[in-house]
Image (cartoon, rainbow over all chains, first blue to last red; front, side, top):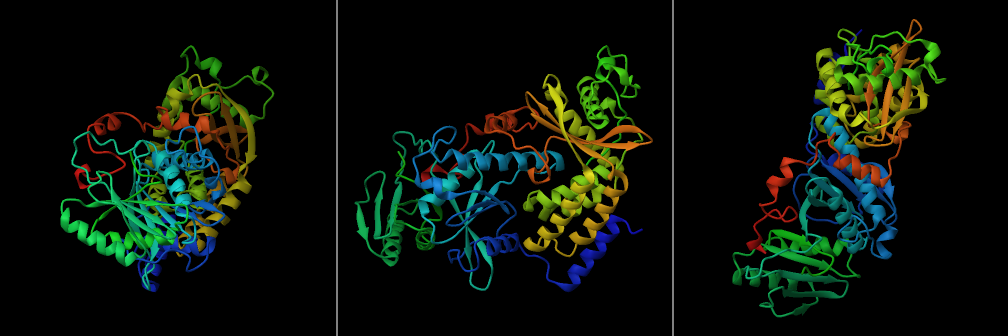
Length: 266
Length: 252
């Protein structure tokens, strides 16, 4: 009888000869997204290779954690949640992710591996950006020990899926000490335009209508503040994930650190 | 992913420390009217509580439970771990010493928590259909996610064969506990009329009959000592940058 290891090596050799070696975890995410949400629904953009991690699929009426249906996103539009989620994400979201993190913790203890340090969000581009943020906060806040690295999955023309890394404003605020030299560049993103300002008020509130204008303003602000490298995007009620992804695409060349927030940080 | 064969023992005899292992024969007349599998599972937990991994006798390793656990993992484990760890896990499966070490580690991880957890056998289900369901789901999932799609089917066939060969008459007993870990799963095997526990886990997929813990229980498990998630590393991070914004705050 062939041993298991022998079968494995045989199959692996056949696989290597018959098909290209799988290049990244994006293939796995891509397959699930296609089955769960369909093709061509994710925002388009450029990103980085998707490393193995927890992946969340968010559609208009479903949220999957890995390939398991987890909960409905409908609760995001209801009253703010209470309980363990400091960002006031719906308790149902938090509980579902905490169950997932516990399974991962058990798996890592048994296998002697690490709990995933990255969460990828594959989101239907028509979904409300604020719903996406509620889900993202639930995933991040429920992770034991430290929040994970986060990425928004984007489709790259002809090259599969990649991830746009982003941060979340801490649910308890930035916690910046008085006197710290913080610019705190903010871009409010809504369905009918954009507004740029800063936490320290050195940037006068400026309202613009197009992404090209946002890009131009950010290029100018980068020249004025070359040491600053982060921008905080605050999506309003009318902003979709597609619009946020497009804003990230124009902001990142000037400000590499993209921070998302449900409201301007204190 | 771990497997050992543990003889039926009874906690009452072990309390005084008179036993060096779980080899005591049991007077059936003194046992509660549970099924033999449930009694074996309960005895196993009592044994773990009192003697930790010493209740595991050498030379009684089985890979069958590891095959079942691997099938359940391929069917419902995290795709990220399967993507990166499957070759390694297949190799571990070939090495009885590594399986033995893993099982001992698992027992030692939970031994302290199990003392006083108040676990009682609550449910049992035959392993044979679980093995079949897990195997089918593992192959379907592998193809659906393009997750080792060529390698998984022959591996699953072999694991399924190994598992059914030894554990087709086996039973998965669910023990519910008042405290952490709240639930324990013990796989039992019967041979020559003797029921033995061949594997244990505190995690089992709900799709294969596992129990869904409440939010409070999940929180308690994550914070509990068994998983060891919270400790020195948290204290070491307090003075560094904000864990939510892993870059110097001056960049804002």
